[in-house]
Length: 147
Image 1 (cartoon, rainbow, N blue to C red):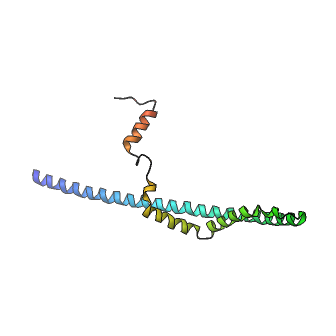
Image 2: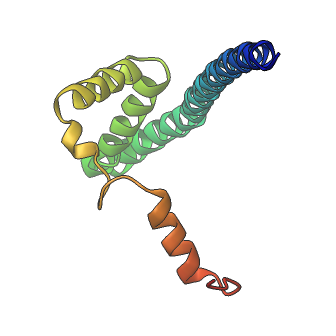
Image 3: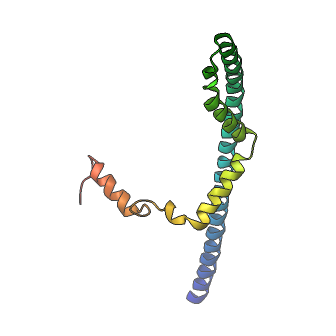
């Protein structure tokens, strides 16, 4: 009788462990999917912000170009064109960020860093540990009572 009961308990425990494993795997897959979708949405917002900024900056650049050109012709001072140089670099960068291939180049460089220069990514004093966090929490806590 004990053997039958024990065998039934073992089978039940084994099926429960399998269920827990499947459940944890499903939860991990969902977390990974959610994290990836959050990252994609953040990137989309960054690109959208860059495109919106480009519209406003483009108008500013155009008005500045017209105004500086008119001023340079009227006052006969070609030095008034000088501010157009840095403004054109900013405009080109924003265009490349919003509509060009800057993000693909950045992604390629990031992959290169991950593949070849991974030592640059290491955290100072190594990765965070539970013990280190707990030590810092205890040092900052005013209510911690040592047992």
